[in-house]
Length: 237
Image (tube, rainbow, N blue to C red; front, side, top):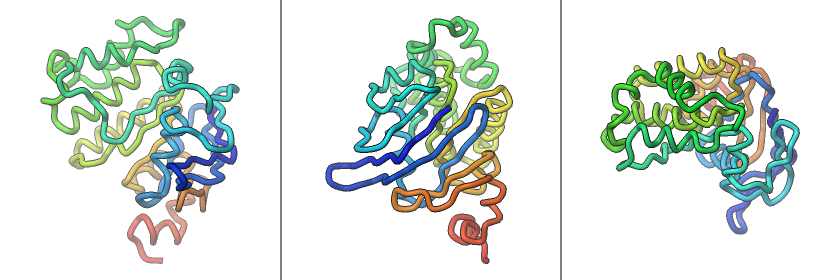
């Protein structure tokens, strides 16, 4: 479904991602894990067209997309929920969801049907549909960011640090929602600071260091890998 082939991304003269190759198959959750500055967020930005690709190729559902604009990539069914949520504080919950539906496929469900589905996933957003985003709690804002991405009815959803700054009980709720989306057939590429959670949710994982993949494989296998356990799970060898 999604494939990066020897992809390189630069910020000026600095190379942030180098010779990166990875795949996400239809219907699976894949996670990128690694320390701060490893290139995870940059990778998602490159996929969604927010950061230019210096070299290599990015393919989605059989089409090369690395030269497309972000709105064109979104229209093809690839949605990106960015780190930090990027909400408009003075815009209502309802308006955010309407904005998220703008690039939905012409063959997709109607707006009302999609909205009903999203409200089933996030009942609190239905209760607060007229409330301004800036007045929501951190957890509710993260739910809104994800819901806005889902309104485009993506084939693949990219989530960047969904648990960042949230209370454990809210993180558990978001994890359950991610599992539900996966059970419904949605493909997900996940970047998550809580490596233990990411490896529990995903089927496959890539470990990134200094802009390159250093390990990859089944998430369950990497969770048992001594190097991963010591470096990212805080466990001794």
